[in-house]
Amino acid sequence: MLKKRDPRRAKSIDPHNKRRLVRALEITAALGRVPKIMDVAHPYFDTLWIGIATPPEVLERKIRARLLARLRGGMVSEARRLHRHGLSHKRMKQLGLEYRALARYLQGKITRTETIEELNHDIRRYAKRQLAYWKRNRSIQWFDATQKKEVIIRAKNWLRK
Image (tube, rainbow, N blue to C red; front, side):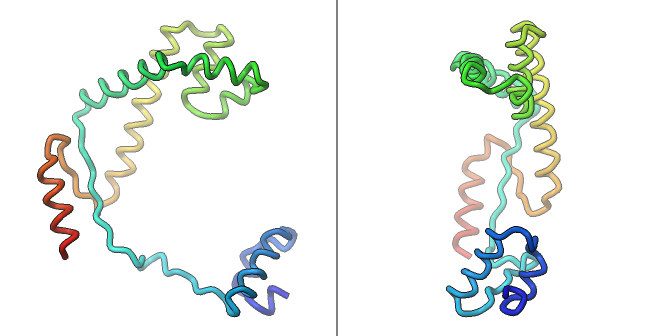
């Protein structure tokens, strides 16, 4: 039935996924037509991309301070509580960067100091990857973290156009 109403959508849905098939039929029925496809190559939105550049040594200090604050705020006790409530160490390691190190700490495989150093190192590497990702976006206008006035002026000028 979906092939008849919306052949393009029918090709993109697994024929054994009843939930998606039914939802696609509901959409065409509600609209009374096949929904339009948004052209991703030509988005409808004009956007201003602003990036805040932070010197590496400042970023490293902020990362460490945030990590220590999170540890003081109960990150270890949260992981311990999750484990007590049934979250295995194996599953904890799959949840991401911080839980991976915390699982090893809770198992007694590394010390608290080693946990902090491992987390600090891994978070810095993650931040570096994020920055590399954003640097590829040529639309971003980068400003130094101290250039608050310039950012506001740029945003106001963009909003006026």
